[in-house]
Amino acid sequence: MLNILMVGNGQCGNRILDSINRQAFGSKSRFAKFYAKQQYKSNVQTLAINTAVNDLKEMKYTKAKDRIHIPHLHGVGANRNVGRKVFDENKSQIMRNLDERGSFDIAFVITSASGGTGSSFTPSLIRELKEQNDYPVYAVVVLPFREEGTLYLQNAAFALRDIRGSGVDGIILADNQYLKQMGGDVESAYDSINEMIAKRLLFLLDSLDSEMMMVTDLGDFKTVMSGGAGIATIGYYEADGEVPIRTAIQKAVSPSGLLFNTNVYEEASRSMIIIKGDKSSLSIDEISTEVEKLSDSVGHVFKGIIVRKGEYPRVLSVLTLESASELEELYHLAVGAINTEKEKKERVQEDKEVDKAFSQIEGLEPQY
Ligand SMILES: Nc1nc2c(ncn2[C@@H]2O[C@H](COP(=O)(O)OP(=O)(O)OP(=O)(O)O)[C@@H](O)[C@H]2O)c(=O)[nH]1
Image (tube, rainbow, N blue to C red; front, top):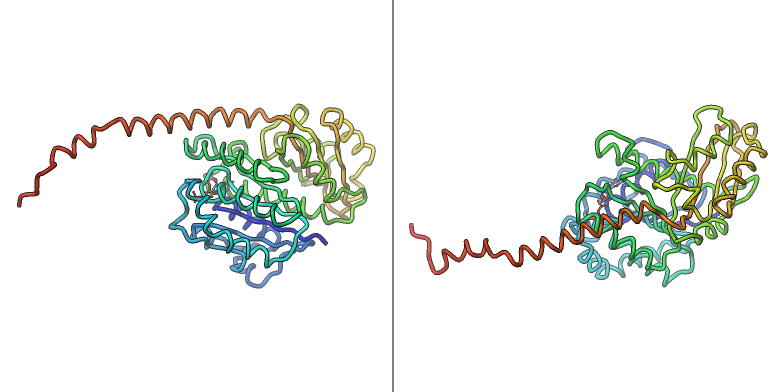
């Protein structure tokens, strides 16, 4: 049995963690967290960390003991410098809480790249975890909608760079912009995106701890994640009826199944494909042909097959990328955003118009 740590930092990280717990409780009841036991096969410890107490209170499926509030007003207002400072001031409390949870085989830290709390806590937390332990730590990082503004864009660029430099064993990207095709208003888009990410992570956890017909394990996952440029994404397909297994595999690496915009056949570097379903739907010939096709362009593909009686096929793909044109595009936008912020600041410093207005009443007193 694997010991797995899942930390959700900041609002976005908290909500995705809550979605993971909701799906793991297997109950939609609001009271599930009080009486139900999570249905994890592994020993999974979940921990939500936030500076904003309201974000923590909003969590419906994560137990109170698994939520740490780091008091700082109502969040750090997208300011990563403040976030870093707040983390340092509270580091010992956070690390003590994690130490008390025992030792792990693998950890995931989930955050948005663009807010203040999660994006600044995550690199520091991962650095601490890596210094004090020898298990692999992966970051699950959510990129912003591109229209959310200059501060979020610049945060995303710096946060990703900081997380990459933190000693992390790999970064799994999910992109709000790419996934907004889910439609609906922002809240329901968030819910659907969180559910997609949660479902994929739970499938991954389940597979890493499974008795498979053909085995992929934590070692294989580590090898896949260490390939490429340290950046990865996950794809998924779930059939709601009988479909040929080759179609299910193709869909799990196609744009509709991925969390991040990439052309797998051009940008992926290593891959892991995990296939679940009833024995009757798992044609080994079809699986081999599809995996061969993928490995022709990707390089190495690990495959795992899990037989689940009576279930329609489900396929998960983990793909590390050696290049990511979408990320280059994001950094291009971020440079523009940083320059805009810089120019605005300089203009305010140069522009003394407001000071001139105030100076007109210098030395005067109100007369009543
Ligand atoms: N997918 C998804 N994205 C979210 C969610 N909540 C916020 N975001 C995105 O996260 C970014 C903002 O980061 P947050 O996680 O809200 O910020 P924070 O880490 O709590 O930091 P501060 O609020 O600045 O203290 C924006 O790009 C949002 O679009 C969510 O539930 N799901």
